[in-house]
Length: 269
Figure (spheres, rainbow, N blue to C red):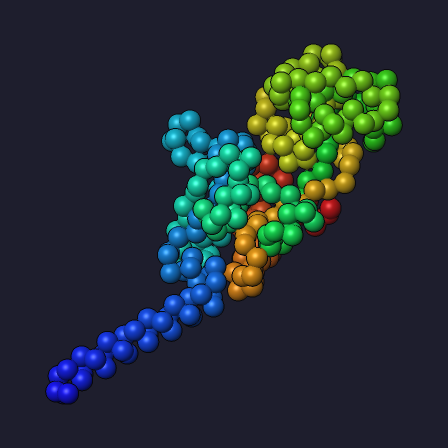
């Protein structure tokens, strides 16, 4: 065999071996390695769930609390972020099919979901909370205090089901928050019920004379799901979140959208 032929053969074999080793290394590094190699974190979101994620009518760009959290995580990973809008009904199936790397869309951490996915540490904990008129002096501390009273809720929501399970409470269902808040201010219901974070957002952004009332249920913890078997990514993601809780970056995002530090709410729950 001529030396030139031998050299070409040796180089080809070395290239093939290097490529194979690189492939093994990337596979061994799992999700984190793929994200780093791609240079992009693919994030599944609904895009229709304000204030968590929605399309800003002025900029026509995605905005919201979860959008800002996703941008923070991508920046700390040293990659860009790309959002993949997906209806809620298919978002978990999309993650399982590999359409995106993570979902950052207020996904509750449940035993059933943990059978299929791994989750980050909780980054949000939120409980059912009463909404009251700003000048209301009633001390409603629980559903028991609302017996015989009218409670406004969104039709078809988890909070409608929770309210209807309470004995003696008169539940009035509405298409959404604008309608039940109008009746609350007008005195046609005595209180309303929603998620703790949504209540904070409504109080912060609404011009109506309303305030947050008592917490009337246990917390739901939300995390960031991703495919199982990616310990390096899990460690990196959790470190980013935990560091952001400590250094105030997460609190800054939270205050922007809710007027409260959600990281403290998370720990308080």
